[in-house]
Amino acid sequence: MSAVTSPPPPTVPAHTRHPRLAPSAEVHSPADGQGDWVLQHGARYVRITEHVADLVQELDGERDHATLAARLGGAWSTERVGSAISRLDSLRLLDDGETKAPAVAPRFQIVPPMTLQLTLLRPGRTMQALRPVFARLFSRGAVAAGMLCVLLGAGALIAQRDAVAVTLNSPLSAVSFTGVLVALLLGVSLHELGHAAVLIRYGGRPSRIGVMLFYLMPAFFCDVSDAWRLPDRRQRVHTALAGPAVQTSLAAASALAAWPLADGTAKTCLLFFAVTSYGTALLNLTPFIKLDGYIALMSHVDVPYLRDRAMADARRALARFLFGGTYQRELPTRWTVVYGFACLAFPVYFLSTALQTWLGTLQRVGWVGLLLAASGLSYIVWMLVRGALRLSAEVKAAGVRRARAGAVCGALAAAVCAALFLPVQQTVAAAYVTDASGTRLVLPQGSSAELIHAGQRVTLKTNGLVLQDDVATARVGAAPAAQTEVPVSTYFPVDLGSAVGMDSTAFSLDLDRTPTPATGTAEVELGSVPLWKSLHRTYVLPFLPF
Image 1 (cartoon, rainbow, N blue to C red):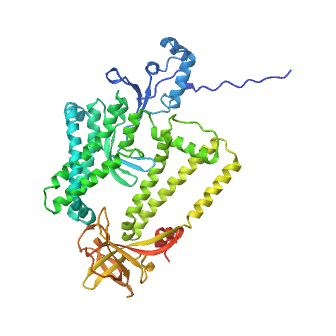
Image 2: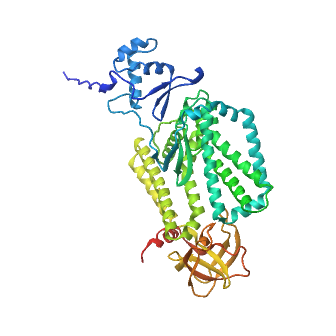
Image 3: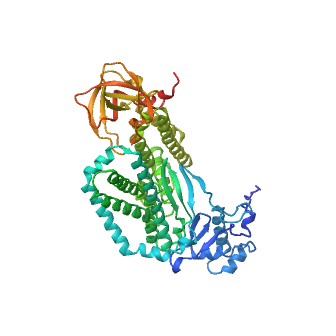
């Protein structure tokens, strides 16, 4: 007779036999008797049913599963209690003797993948006491008036399009730049206070307001995680959209105020503030990164962790297409797969576009600017590598055959190598100056001056902070290069005067007429080269000591 050995029963953690809720965990009932129950532990919010809320409130560390089932009655059985306890334990919402009460969030913290946050304000009773005021400020009539103002402001910018073009194509004075920067910081502060005000209007409690570096870009933030406690998802959408609404209202007021003014510093500052505030608000409404637009979309469809789950489905769809296999869906809808692909691609697109936009300015700075550009490019590569590793993890979990996985990976590697040999137009960022000796091309010493030769085509452009329109075309002259010193403002879109000079290499230019303006940026065309050579010249060659 053969012996049959039964598998040992699964090990039940000791702390789940007589479960106790984690320290400082709190159950919130639906506001005004509507909406979902919410279990909060620090900054985490988990929506639960009323039955689970009843169970959670009985977890005192004294009762076992059978006692809990008998006490709750109804549909609760010992097995169902055990299943619910296991789920709560997997979410680290039970006291296991090691889980500490969540500490107050530190003033400075790092939020992966690339966000640095500094808390400036913790809204307390003062802002809570202003709830009646916020109710009036964000009434339907006030919101309608704000929307009308936003449309009128956009119309005012269109009416002033010539002045706007001049403003965006010209360098700002140091005073104008400082004024606009301070105004933008104040505007974004009001943007974040708008989130807090609407959340308080609906009965929520914002926890933190501060500044952050979001993908290397300065911004403000307001932690409105408490919005998940709001009973109506429309209230959560309103909370998310309050910031862009405030910011576009400020932009509109600035555009309307600039309309009757004559050309000058005040008009320049107002127009620049209006354009940048409208642009920042539009970026905030993008639903593919974790900004206000994403929070609004997630609240509207009422799907927690929408972006993460959609990206997981997109990765699995790509893995199925390339490698085959069986994958589990996170979300049942088709549109979320497309949305997930957009979320995967947008950060790479956004950073690469920003890098391409600012690459010329960074090149003109010299090796310091190129170091920043190389850091940005390295981060883009890291995101691609991280995505590839996550894709490989999905493929491995799906049990794909090694032969097919190896063949597909080989084909992808060959495609990447082939792409490195694609021809691209190589350019060098420089500047031009006009003085008594004529118009000359200038580059900072230690940059790519050795790549400049007589006869190369040069495009002269304006030196605007946002736009750089073409001014004229020229050719590099035959005269030998000379060492010179030019104002540091030559390479920056901010006019700092001529007090500070920068050692540079100057080349003569052959052109038909004196350009207007007399100074600006320039692009020297080096011709068509393989992609790998362009990358080597831009990001490697300037750092080599020989």
